[in-house]
Length: 211
Ligand SMILES: Nc1ncnc2c1ncn2[C@@H]1O[C@H](COP(=O)(O)OP(=O)(O)O)[C@@H](O)[C@H]1O
Ligand SMILES: [Mg+2]
Image 1 (cartoon, rainbow, N blue to C red):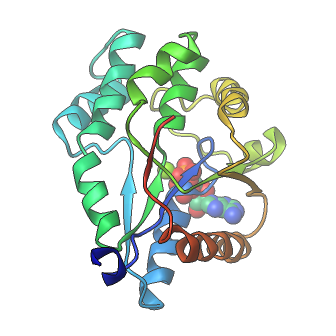
Image 2 (image 1 turned 180 degrees about the vertical axis):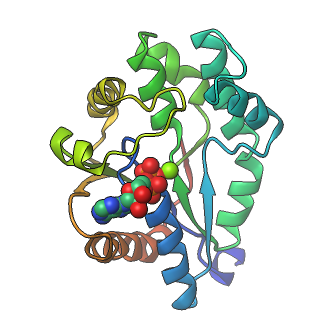
C-alpha cells in the first residue's frame, strides 16, 4: 500500500497583522523541525519571486497601481501558482510552515471594503491548512512594537480593520489564536508545541480544499 510508505506532511499557516512575529517565528519553527530530523519548508505569501509576485511587489511598494479587485485576484493567483508544488511536497512528507495565506488575502481586501464572499470565491479549491495559528497583539502591544514600514497597508488604523476581518474568518475547528505579547523564545516554545501536535496527527488525514 503506497500510503504506508510514509505519512504526508502537515500544512501549517501563521496569520496575524504586521509585526506580530510571523516571518521570524515561521523560519525558527522550520529550523527547529529540521534539527529534530523532521522534514520542513518555509513558504510565504505573497511570494514576490513569481510572475504575479513581481506585479504584487510593484503594488506594495507603490510603484504600480491596480484596482482593489485586480490586486486581490493577483494575490490569489500568486497562491494558485504554488499549489502543485505544495501538494507534491506535502505528499512527500514535507511539513509546510507558511507565512500568511488566503486568510490574509481575504482579510486585507475585505478591510478595504470589498465583499467578503466575493473575496473568498477565487480562493476556493486551494489546499486547506491543517492548522492556522492566529498571532494576536493588543493595539497597545502592537504600538509598543512600532516600526511599521512605509509599504501600503502598514498603517495601524488599517491593521485594526484587518484584525476585525480575521475574526469573521476564524474557524475554531482548525484555528488557534495565540497571544504574541511575550518574548520571542517563549512564543516559539508555545508555537512549536502546536506545530508538533499537528505534524503528528496530519499524516492520517486526507488533504482538504478551501473553504
Ligand atoms: N516576541 C517578540 N517581542 C518583541 N519583538 C518581536 C517579537 N517577535 C518579533 N519581534 C520583532 O518584531 C518585528 C517584526 O517581526 P516579523 O517576524 O517580521 O513579524 P511579521 O512577519 O509578523 O511582520 C521584528 O523587528 C522582530 O524582531
Ligand atoms: Mg512578515
